[in-house]
Image (cartoon, rainbow, N blue to C red; front, side):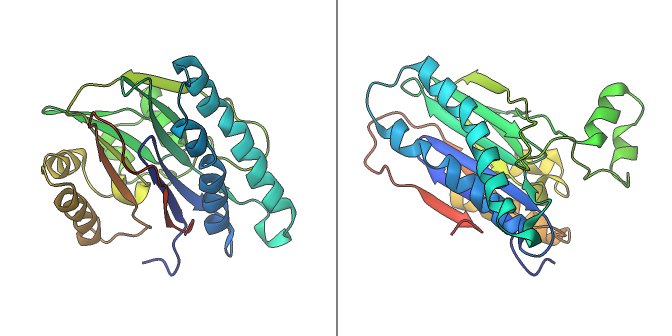
Length: 245
C-alpha cells in the first residue's frame, strides 16, 4: 500500500541484515539504506582469514556506533531528513560456522527454525512489548493497540543507543528468518513457522510474502531466509535489496 520502499537489506554468506526506515519525504529510505551500506563494510573483514570469535563479535557490536553516526551525518546535511531513523536486525555467521551473533534495534525480527521448533531470537523494542512484559496488556489486546508500532529504540544518529549482541550456537540444518514488521505485524507466528518449514527456500519466501499480501500488506515487506550449510564458500559477494540498491 506504500508508494515507496523504506526497507533495505543485505545478503552475504557471513552477514544478513534488514533495516526498516522511518521519516518524512525520503527519510525512511535514506536512513535504512545508510545503515545497510555502513554495515556492509564488515563484509570485507569477515571474508578475510584468521579473524577470531571475540574480534568478530566486537566488530559487529561496535559497528552499531558507526552506523548510528553515519545516519546522523546524512541527516545533518539535509533539513528534509531531520528526525529520520531506522530499525536494524543483523545476523552474522562466524567462528567457522559454529556461532551466529544477532545485533538488533527496533521491531524488525529474527527467527530460527530448528527441527520443528520456531524461536524468535530478537526482542521488539516497542512500547507494546514493554506493556506485554509488564503484564498490563494481553496478546489479544496488543493486536489492536493504537501504539503497537511505537518504537522505544531506533537508529537516529543521536548517539543514545546501548547496543547488545546476542550469541547463539549453530546446529546443521538451522534455518534463519530476518524480516521487517511488514511481515511479522500481519502474519501469525504459526503461519511463519508453516512457511519456514517449506524445504525449498524460494517456495518458502513466496509463501511468506504472499501471506503478507493476502492480509493487506499495509507496510513494506522484506523477507530473508538463510540455511546453515557447511563447506567452503565459492561466492563472497554482497547483495543489496530495497532502498539500498
